[in-house]
Image 1 (cartoon, helix red, strand yellow):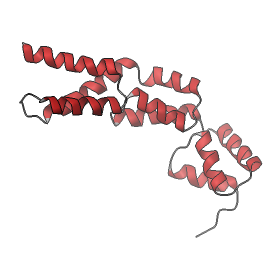
Image 2 (cartoon, helix red, strand yellow):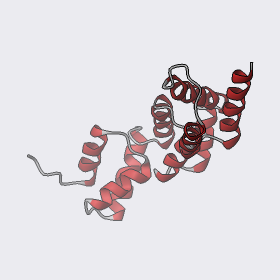
Image 3 (spheres, helix red, strand yellow):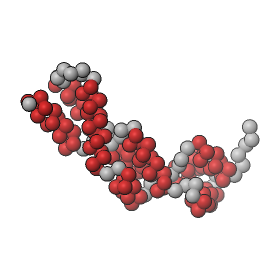
Length: 157
């Protein structure tokens, strides 16, 4: 196996496996022992070529996590950890995952949880578990509460 000799070669190897934010790529190259100057030059050049773009990375991650049924809060947190600038996160979230879409995702989670009951009514312990799971997944408390209120209305009618 050929040994990688430059930061550019190593960066291209990394990028051939998965997408990286600028910050993630810098960290990965630093772990491989490349100098700060070499890393900066490499990441800048890759950015100019369009191989590393935080906006494209954010849009891709939002789509990936949305397909996995993740909440807006979860996705925002993951993008922040990846080093995507806050302005890009806000713009891409508004464009690719508006709050209305999160309601759809939450309803899909809710339907899945309800479906496991096979028509019977959930007991308090199950409802508590559902609430904890949805809140831990990052869904807004008000939206989770609305699911429970709708559930109550449906069972009363």
